[in-house]
Length: 362
Image 1 (cartoon, one colour):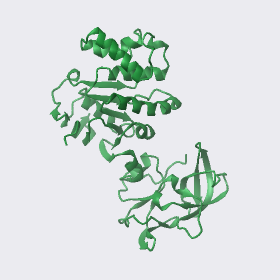
Image 2 (cartoon, rainbow, N blue to C red):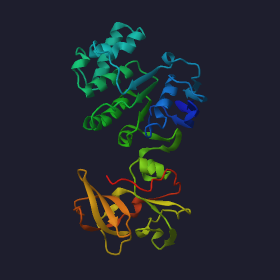
Image 3 (tube, rainbow, N blue to C red):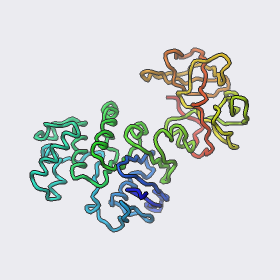
């Protein structure tokens, strides 16, 4: 099946420094894909190349099977939304939303109907006559989204659209943004550096590192099976331990680590030489008699996170492990705690690239 958007082997260099290095990915019709990565990884440059605002040194971008090389920006039929929203300050909400439709010379009645539809879609019904200067940041963000969606774009492209909002508002709007894009039935490419935002909005992630693809897949895949140490640590999974030896017993595979012998669960494969063991923070549970993976340590720091506490637990070996502790485990700083580590929350990573051996405690 031909993908709706097909990006192949994109390379780009600025001033002799490579910014994009053979980036390839595809987007299916109606899918939301997030380009995710740290600042400077090339994700915004990649978005601009797809939009036609930049030219790649090598590679191709195709839409619905048609190569877009030489197709100017205004003929691609894409909707673009950026962090600053770029609204017209002295026009009403309705006039801002209608801008693209009027550029297409749509009939007045059609424009009015489409504007009303978009206002309803983004939750701003009745706001058409208001000045955008009278709106909150979240409301302006919705107007910008409605303006991008109004002309029924073939592809919606969003570059850090929530970046200028405060964290509370950003967290509230991420889920709504996904629902709005879904309701519009549009295919979207979404650029962000925030993994939580990407998880909430996207069907799949394209995680970039230094201009190259580090991993592609659904959020659950990247979180549950990160392809490298870089992927794990970028996603906030910092508990990476050397697997010094391995074997298999009656209960399945195990590895030797600085925390002692840890069972991986029946379905896990034995690690390759030099592999790392990932302990996800949700692994902690009350210890059970005779169960494997018992961990004892001193709580050095604890951060309240609503239903759980993120605790930094120092093992006798000196290894620090960050775990999410529920109310049944307790999390008093300075106290000794004993927990069990759920084997299903342990993963092996063969690719050590990007491994930061020291990570700040939150």
